[in-house]
Length: 229
Image (cartoon, rainbow, N blue to C red; front, top):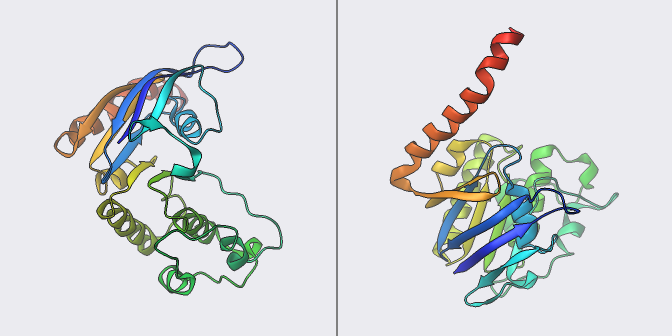
C-alpha cells in the first residue's frame, strides 16, 4: 500500500501547488491520475520520486517512509546522453531479481538498440525510456504520459505490460491526457483538482468522471472559442 497523507508543496512561499493530498493506492492495481493543466499532477509525481521536498505531509509504502529505491519513474520528457546507443542506455540500469532479457524486449518493441538514440523517433525514445524503467523491477512504477508518441501496436502492448505489472503485485500509477487510455487499463482513477484529490473513481464510475472533466473544459473554453471564431 502506498499512502500519502496531507501532502503539501509550495514554491518560494508562493501559493501552494499541492494543498493537502490524501491518497491510498493498493498494490496489485493500476491507478490513474487525471486533472486539467495546472492541477498539480507533475508536482505530485516529482514529490513521490523525491525530486521535490514537501513542506508538509508524509508518503509511506507498506507503513514505512517511501524511499527512492522503491520506485521507478518514467518522466513525460525523457533525456538521453548524446552519441549513446539504446543498448548502452539500458546498460546504465541494473536488472531486477527477475532478470531482464534485452533481446526479447528488443523483439517485442522493434527497437534498433545498436543505433544511437539521436536517430530514434519519438515513439522509439519513449519505448527505450520505458524499458529503462522496467528493467530494475521496482515495486512501485510511476508512468507520466507513457502513451505519448506510441503507435497503435506499441500502445496496446503497453496496456498488456501494465496488466502484467498488476498481476505481479506492483503498485502502478499512470497519467495520460487521453482519458480513454486510462479507462482501458486502470482499476481506479484519482482526480486531482487545484492541488487536492477531489475524488477516487472505480471502474463503474469512470463515465461519471469523464462527464465531469469534459463539462469543466466546456465551461472554461466555450465562451473563449465563440470570441475567437
